[in-house]
Amino acid sequence: MERDGEGTVSSQTQRVNNGRSVSPGRVRTGSDPFLVTCRLFSFVTALAAILCIVVNVYSAVRSFKHGYDVFDGIFRCYAVVIAVIVVVAETEWGFFIKFWKVLEFSAGRGMLQIFVAVMTRAYPEDYGQRNDLILLRNIASYFLLTCGAIYIISGLLCFGFIKRARQAKEVSREQAINDLQELERRREELEALLIQERA
Image 1: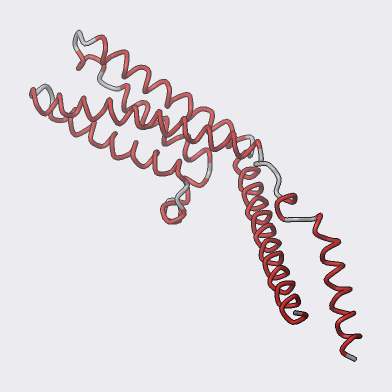
Image 2: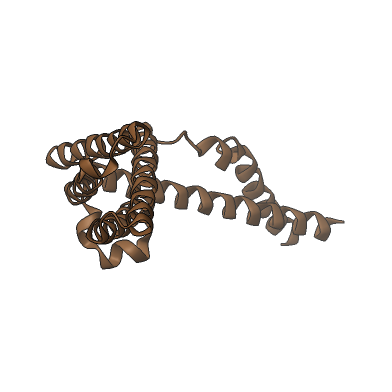
């Protein structure tokens, strides 16, 4: 009876060994190009928003320090706060998105980005003859404005729905790979136990 049992276990082990060609490493596929492009664009958008933050912070400090216009300084502070929201939204932090559902959609993000770009571009006469600041402000505002327009267009084309569907598929694939790795680990443990019993 023992031999029959050992023969059964050996045949099962042989079948597992024969199936080793389907390893978790070989099941793993490359990243989805669409999701990679979306992440890259999110990174670029975050950079544009950070550039707007820099411009607005400098303008706010300049307004308060030299007493040009206190209201302009307050306006710039609001622009900084909203730009920070844009940056955090691009990280797609689940805790944050849970309370800002509108930012889960591309059109919502795009409108917020355009709003920050317009706020950054406002009050051009306050810069005087500082051509370097004017250039930096224009680069930051139009950069973020372009990103916002792309977000709105992608939202109208339902890219957000496609992105969420592919993200769910990627999570399912990663979970399947993790399950295969766990099965592989347990198989190796069983093989080690069988070798110890035979010894």
